[in-house]
Image (cartoon, rainbow, N blue to C red; front, top):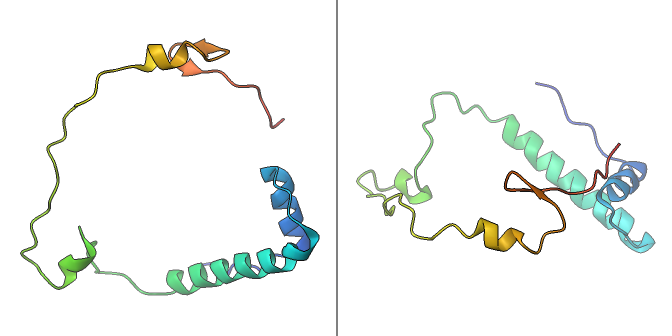
Length: 104
């Protein structure tokens, strides 16, 4: 498993540019620290050996094995309104919204 590298201020500026976000100068370091904290947490989580651990259907299922799932029946309950919703769209093709290309 590869170790994640820490971001730099130039990385944060690049991410902001790509995201079209305007980050005030006094917030850059705070954003950098928060992003690096998130990556550090992900790195810790990736280091945990989860081999043989079964996924849970619900967090409390670890303590109550007889927990019944409260799932509704999977069925359509709403009518299809996509044509009505797309009437005000500037450009639509085959039921899809067409948008301008923003990344070359």
